[in-house]
View 1: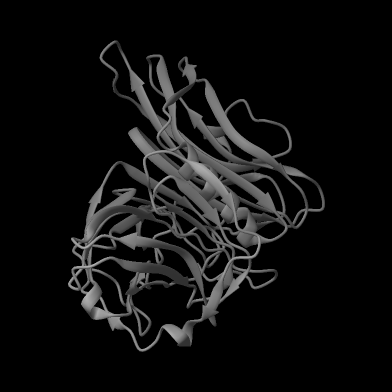
View 2: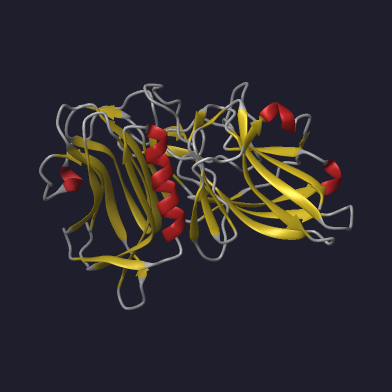
Length: 359
C-alpha cells in the first residue's frame, strides 16, 4: 500500500497497557536515526495468527462516485479496515455497513472503533488508530438487527479528504450468543441505501482488497541490555528485496468479489501485533531504556501506547527516529505487553529501536 504521495504518508505504532490516557505530543523529541546506529538486529520472534477475519478495503483507493469498495461475509468476531480518498466534487459518506442476511435477529457489538477524516492521509490514519486503541477493550452493543436490517459506521467525506477506518465487530445470535454470520460492505454513498449488500462493487485498482484469516498476531520479542542499541522491523514487506518479515507474520488471503483470487496484505494493514516484550537486564542494576520509532519507509504522524498513556507524534520523517518514551528498568529486567499496527496511508517497514543507559 504505497500511497499516492499527493499529501503525506501515515504510520501508527501502538503499545498496549491496562487503561488509557492521552498525551498530546505537539513537539516530540526526535533524533537522527543515524545516531542510533550501529544497532543489533533482534532475533525475529515466531508470530501466530489469532482472532477472527480481517476485511481489508483499499481498492479503489481513490474514487469519484458512489458504490461499494469491498464486500464479504463474516461471523462472530471480525475486523474491517479501510482507506479511501474522495476525488468526487461533492461530499460523500464513506464507511462500512453490516447487514443481517440471516433468518434470525443478530446482536452486533463494537469491540474497538476508529474513523478519521482529513486532507492529510497520515493524520486521518493517526486519528483512526488512536481512537481504536482507546476503545478496543470496551464491548458495546451497536444494534440488534432484524433479518435484512443494516448498521452503518461511517462519516461524511469532502472532496480531496481521506477516510480511514478500523472497526472490530462481534455478531452473535440466540440466548447463548452463538457466532452469527453477517455481510460487511465498505462503500460510499450520497443517499443511504436500504440494501447496502446489493450495491454494485466498483472496479479494483492497483491497491489491495481482500479477506484474511486472522486480525491479530501474537509472539514474544526479547531484548537484552547487553546488546546496546537494537532494532526490529514491524510490518516489513511480505516479499522482495525490502522484506525482513518475521516468521508467521503474513497469511494468504482471498478477494471475495473477484472470484476468491489469492491476495497478500503487504504491510499487514489492519493487523494488530500483540507482543510480549521481555527485557533482560544483564547489568543487574537500574537502567534507562529508550524506545524509538523510525519510519524507514516514509514519513507521517504516529500513535504509541505505553502502559496507561497513548502518545501521538508530530510530523516525523524517515531520516529521524521519534523518542516515544524512556522508562526505568529494574535490576531484574521486566516483561511488557505491546501492541503495534500500521495504519492507512503508511509505508513500511516501521523500525523500532531499543537503547539503554545507566540510570
